Length: 128
Image 1 (tube, helix red, strand yellow):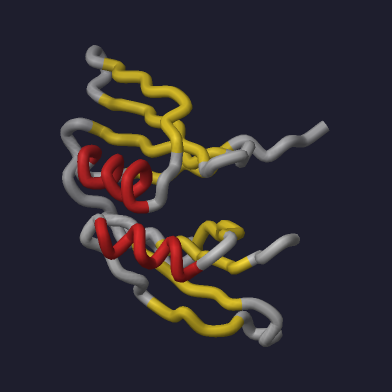
Image 2 (tube, rainbow, N blue to C red; image 1 turned 45 degrees about the horizontal axis):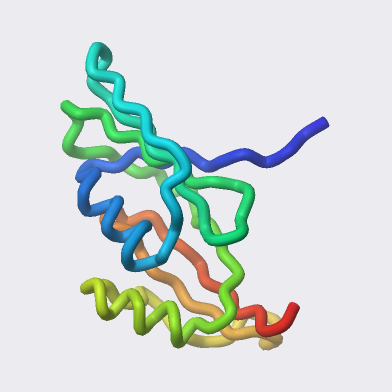
């Protein structure tokens, strides 16, 4: 049996990342673990009604990471890109691309970058 649990990303400024995911995107804090001895924190977040989570790993003494070009993005279905865009703007963020159409032309889509530059794809699913 396999069940998708989470995607882990390393972040360099925990407070900025928490503001982005909790306030600007409206995710919910599932669990936070601070490991003082080993100097790192694990924060598990989820979108409303979502099961797979984003795990933010914050290594207290690391202030920079090199992202490879193999990683792409995580994608979320949203009811309204416009509503997400408004919430992002209220919190000091803007879309990095879009809104536009998916390659098939069937749905609206957009991208936003988190504080560490990780891309998040938003795909509008109205009623389905």
